[in-house]
Length: 63
Image (tube, rainbow, N blue to C red; front, side, top):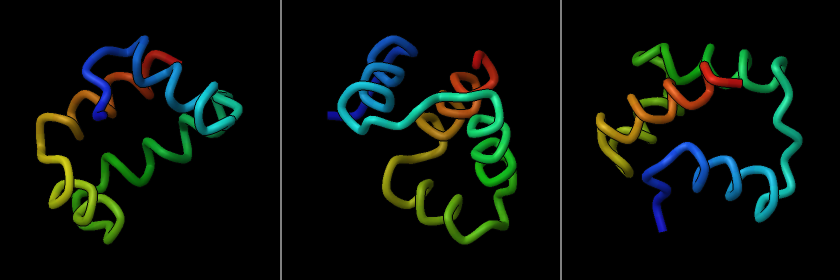
């Protein structure tokens, strides 16, 4: 399931994936996901689309 809300996404990352959501982690991920020339970002867009990428960036900025 692809999360559609911040709450779903946060629960997925922190509880199901057991990733500690720190400001440092969010900043690192934003560095990747705001760079559309980054290979990981290109792959993310192929898999999940531009809209989900925009959501993800918004969610990381909330941390």
